[in-house]
Each structure stands twice: as C-alpha cells, then as structure tokens.
Image 1 (spheres, one colour):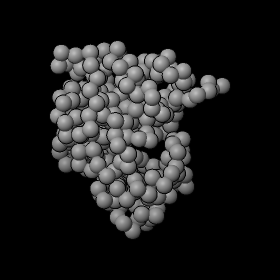
Image 2: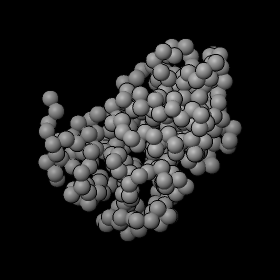
Image 3: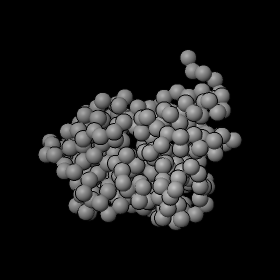
Image 4: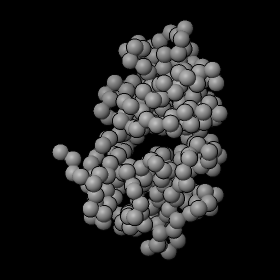
Amino acid sequence: MQLHRFDNIQEFWHSQKAYLLQHQVENNVLLSISHTLLHNPERYLGKPYLAIVQTSGEILAVAIRTPPQKLILSKAQNMDALRLIAQDLRQEQLPGSMGLAFEAEIFSQTWQALTGQFYQRSVVMKIYQLTAVQTVSTAKGYLRLATQSDRSILIKWLSAFLSEIDEAVSEDVEHQVDNRLKQQNTYFWVDSTPVSVASSKQVLPTIGRINLAYTPPEYRRKGYATACVAALSQKLLDQGCRHCLLIADLANPTANHIYQAIGYRPLSDWHEYSFTSKQQA
C-alpha cells in the first residue's frame, strides 16, 4: 500500500477519475473540486493537497485539500489507507476533515492518535440526489443570473451564509464572489428585488450540483428558497444532467424539508470534524 501525492491536477485527475466515478454520489464533493481545479484553478488561493493511496494498481482512497479548508476524503476501500493519509499530513496544520460518516470518523480517530489533537464532530449532513423536479407551489418571481451589478449583495449574503454555518468569514469572500460572477453559476430568485440565491455547477455532463442556497431571514417562509432551488435544479436537468446533488446540514430541518419536497432523496451521511489542541467541553 503506497501513497502518491500530485503537484499536477491533470495527472491527478487522470490517475483517479475512474475510481471517483465508480461512486459518483458519495464522491461528488471531490468530483466537484477536481472539476474546479481543472477548469477554474484561480478559484483557490493556495496550493491544493492531492493524494491517492493504492496497492497493486488498485486505488483504495483519495484525498483533496484546498487550504485553508478541511481535508476531504473519498469513499475508501480500505480504512488502513486513511492512516497513510494522516501520516502524510501529520506535520501540517490541519483544521479538520470531512467525508462519508465512517471514513471521516476513522480518519479523525487516527489523527488524534498520531498528533494528540482532539477531534469533534462539528456538522452532520446528508447527501441528496434528484432525478426529476416535483411539482410544488412556487412563490411569485423568476430566476435570474447574478451579474457584476449584484456584487455587493452577493458579498453580504455569502458572508451571512458562512456565519450561519459557522465558517470563518474572511477577505476570501470577495474572491469567491468574483469567481462565482466570472463563472456565471449563481442565480437569484427575484420578486421585485433579489430574495433568495443559489449556485450550481455541472460537474460532469450528467452530474449537476447545487453548492450554495441562502435566503436572508427577512425573506424566509415565503416559498422563495423552494422556488429558487427547484428552478435551478430544473435548469441543470434541462442542460443534460441526469441527476442533481446537494449536501444539506441536518441541523436545518426547514432546508431538508424543502429539498425533499422538490424531489431530492437522501442517500448517504456526510460528516465534518474539527481538530483542536484542547478537548471541547
């Protein structure tokens, strides 16, 4: 069993794409990041960590990290492969890990044993898949592509979204917004004024992904989020995607209800862990 790190995204993608595609749903986050690194590398400010663990030519696990974000783990064929990844990263300042529930927990336990750092599960999420948008009552309004004139509101809303999910808000927000506008992948639901926002990505010709959905508090409980996500999901299907994926925080029952009403079906558990030098109370 050997670990191989890559400096070149093209070589990395060629080496492991078949493995990730075997389990497209479970590996959708890694597929999405790989797609971005291939086609829009300026989205990330730091040098990515790209690694595979294999034996006799068979891939056992894949890991990606785009600093300062947490490590993302693929579905693993052998849990010992996660130990090799932890050993390879043990000298680095790793804020946490995320992945399928079992893989993320095993890695976090291994990380604590190797480094003495403590781990705590910070977010419990669910991977959802949609193949057809269900007929739902939609709010008044229409879907509109965000443009450069929307930059200030996107910065404000993305900052608020990150605060709600307890992600650190930094100057990187402006970089993210500028990149979203450049990629033309962010849409508003508009009812006289923007009232909800969602972003999408066509990761592969047959796979679409919703990776941001936010409605400011003053516009909630009016059906805007349902209308926005439903319309954007249908747009992905119309572009040729056979299914759409998203990941939802189970601590937000309203969002989970909305997604299921639209037609998203829960498939896999996805957990996020944080690493700290002190044990949390």
